[in-house]
Length: 598
Image 1 (cartoon, rainbow, N blue to C red):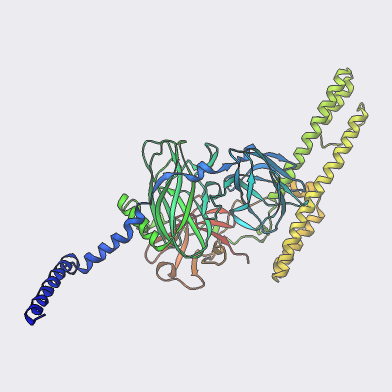
Image 2 (image 1 turned 90 degrees about the horizontal axis):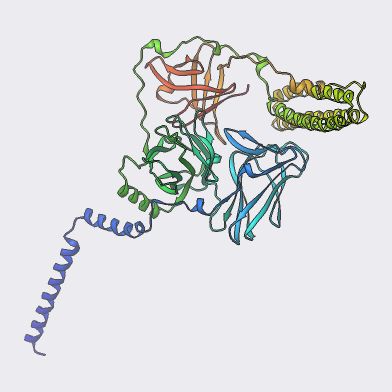
């Protein structure tokens, strides 16, 4: 090939390369860095967004099989009662105490049994029987309601019996708030926060049955709701999903908030035409460990055709979190669904006279006689319930016997039996009384005495267990106090112990140190002095700004108090008593402070 041809081919190659570079320049090199990054971001998020549904039918409502507590049979002392504004199954107080029920299973399959419960530190052993399966269950301490799962279980379609039986003859603090079967593909998780496990504020919503499930309804007061306390397994992003039902014609405003970092997610509950729907309302960044999630309404929602079934925290990968946030941004205004710090409301412009009185009875020092270490309330209730039950059975037996003597026309016997019915706890006179009635009266007296003594001994047993706990911690002042109580209980008859009403002062006393309730560590403590002056510590350190300056406690009304900063003339917080040893100073939800024992 001669040199001329070689140069011609070389020039043609250069021309081809130049045209390619122009195309490349037009396609990419001529675009700014910001445009390329935006394009790349759209490419990364476009594919996942196709599979994200923020509003969809509730899978759990359709698949779960609840067993309503009202449908259970309660045996040997167990019964339906109210605990923390919730209806629960309780009073498993003797060996053989049992609740029974029957699931109606629509199809053969594999299921998990979920028991939602709470209990005190002392464990209690139970037997759980479901279908032809039997399990032993030792309860673990949990102040909050948590799920306990048994499974997987292969169960046939049709009726499936369930029994939960106390194994030992001891008082149990077990409270069951719901029982259900979950299909194996739907996991039981502590991150599923159900209506029946919420801690409801005073004047907050109610938990009641609707369409065979328990829901939160009747949000009568704005900003008053409830909260769940849970353990977050891993630090990361979590989608907040709410399952609810609404037959209303217009949407209602609610807020999910995280008091620990003042994060809130406002959201609207749109009408669902009566169907239970799952709505993704936002994304929270949560740290591993103890966490409080708060739910409240932004407006009163009193209609019976509305109910919130549960709130779920669904873990997200970093890519999923970006996709969900982008979908929320596209489908709703930022002001409607967002995770942003809740604004601090400015203090109201009020005259100094409106800031309450500085001297009031609650600032007196609490008398020593009112510092009861333990309350008899629970045992008094047990005593009342069980003795009334025995007395009612005795009276029913006497009435049947009385009818027998009516047929015999032995009216002297009828009148004598009637006197016993009027006064069943008074030893009967033998005059005109049939031998059968005398035997019944003696048997009742023996059984009643045994029952009363059993309840007293159960109370003593709990006191001694508490004493052993103080001994292990070397809390000698508490041991001495317990010993006084034990001696007092031993010297009294059960009737004196459980029927005499203790006189209580109507005054609730503020002086002392109050600590913010937390699961493992105390975050905040406030000390109130008799002169009304107060100090605050956060994790043992003096805080900055207003709470670190001098402030006072003042009374503004019946069970209404404020912490007031005289230097800046602002109200730092409002609070009220929940009981003698607890006050609530709400901040994005209920915030409880407990009196520190001296």
